[in-house]
Image (tube, rainbow over all chains, first blue to last red; front, top):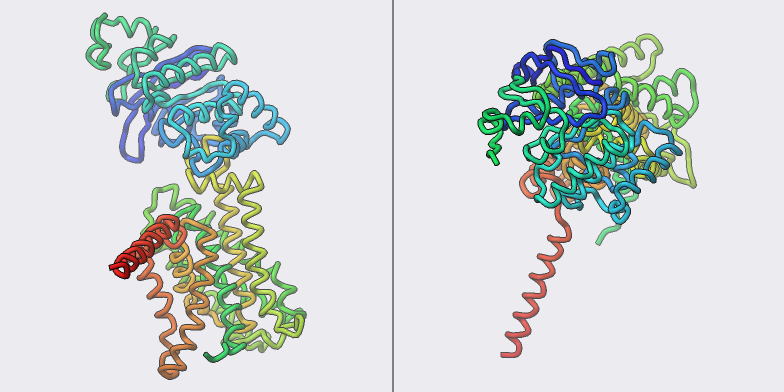
Amino acid sequence: MLEIQEVNAGYGRFHVLFDINTKMRDNDITVIVGPNGSGKSTLLKTIMGITQVYSGKILFNGTNILGLPPHLVTRLGIAYLPQVDNVFENLKVKENLLMAGYTLGKDEAKERAKEVLGDFPALNEYMDRMAGMLSGGERQMLAMAMAMMRRPKIMLFDEPTGSLSPKIAFEVLDKIVKLRDDYGVTLVLAEQNVRSALEQGDEAILLVSGKVMFKGNSQELLKHPELGQVYLGIKKT
Amino acid sequence: MDMIDPIVLSQAIIYSSLLTLLSIGLTLTYLTTKVPNFAHGSLAAVGAYVTLTAVKLWSGNPYHFLFLALIIGGLISLAQYIIIFRPLIRRGATVVALMITTLAIEFILLAVMNIYADYLTRQFKIRSRYFFLSPHDIDIAGQKGVLVISPTLAAVTVTLLYLVLNKTKFGVAMRAAIEDSSLASVVGINVNMVYAVSWFIAGGLGSISGALLPLWFPGNPDMGSGIIVSVFAASLVGGLGSIYGAVVGGYLIGLAEIFGTVGLSLELGSWVIPYRPLIPLIAIAVTLLLAPEGLMGVDWKGVTKVIWDKIMGLMHTRQKNRAH
């Protein structure tokens, strides 16, 4: 379980998150939504140790991970997939996978690569291609495969369907949900495609100007008479 | 056309090979930490004085002490990164602030080298200014050792770097950290460790280069300040974004400096020799104007296509004119 307690964070003097309190339960899909600039990405980065935290605690299975450098947070079993720049464009696909398994032994890395290529078979065709040459959907698949190389307990996705066509976005989201179903990975999604993400999610957090405005069941937020319409542009059906 | 003087040719080969080693190091630290290190040249002075001390106090030829020079230069460079640059980068220091810091380090290293040179002279009666290690050089196949070892060392370094960067997990991690340090850290790479290693390698290469320089060129505490413009020119001409560019730039600038100065002094007189530093400065200016990303940043396929199209166009026009 990931628990965020009274976290205030930002970038230098630019305070972005204010007194964030929330929990992400094991095997749940938690969807973080909110208008542009509300702090969704910053919350994920804060968990990873990329931002500056002014106060608070982040407990991962009871251990405070605040202050740990990102590579150590990763080694604890938390994977983060950034919104953009989520693969090494100047490395080949196989080198990207090698880097994703950087902390693993040689044999273990080989074994994991075989496994993830089974889940993302399309990548087999591109092993010697530079990751920068892949399409948006293929890149997202590679990013997910990279994260799965480390068999994480939690995966933090920063707008995974952001720049994809609706069809590819649906496929990617479907694949993400399968990760939870097949491997029991706890998923946290910061999403712009609010409706489809909330439909797939268990829990939802609505962030507005760096503050938690709503916390609860994602279906509840989807059907909320005001919040969805005012902050997320969800039209009543 | 006159034959090239073998001494000038030797000088050009040695100088450009050692310049290449220095520019690989400068490029490596710039690529990883974005620090334009003006103190990098002084590591050459460190290497020169390590070799001078070892050769005079323990005897043997300078090549016996190359590894010692690599370790000492590497450790000084590593200390710079850990003690000074890493904390500054963490605090969000700008490139300008980092550059000014490197200038400060350059002054400190220069002062230390001067003090050390005086110490060597006073304590051990060793000539420590404008010194040469050439009397301690060895012969390899009838040639001065430095003439064979300098280009060999440059070739071995480039080959090793290529193999490490492409065939080892740590090397690929280095490329990954160079491309995107943030992503590298979230996939589990200890980026600080990668940067520390690159600073060590850079310092070691600079120091080895300096250890060999006095076998042909005079060694002095300020030899680093003297060569740093050429090192920057080599890295810029090749492209600060590419280690292989540093190799191309190192040889281009090195050869241009030696042949250019000798050629111009033969044509115009020896008064041009003190103006030798103008050659790398002109190379920097021309590169920044025409190809700011250096030779490795140029789209050579595109350039070749444009030239080819122009030639074909000209030939076509000529054929048309002849037909008329």
